[in-house]
Image (tube, one colour):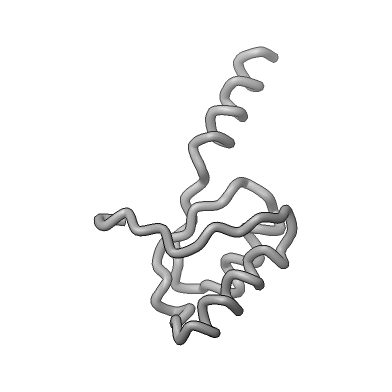
Length: 76
């Protein structure tokens, strides 16, 4: 995170999004165990697949979805 280098951006809303990222990474000789931080939304599918496919990574939830949840909580 110190370098703030984005490796890849995927589209989609299911666990295949994470799987596709890992496959693409490894096709370019990347090592999944070297990924130490992943920024995703709060989708349970994303969370489960990230912890399974990228076990050494910490999850950071993206700012947009955090703010969205906070706004919903304030309105209720």
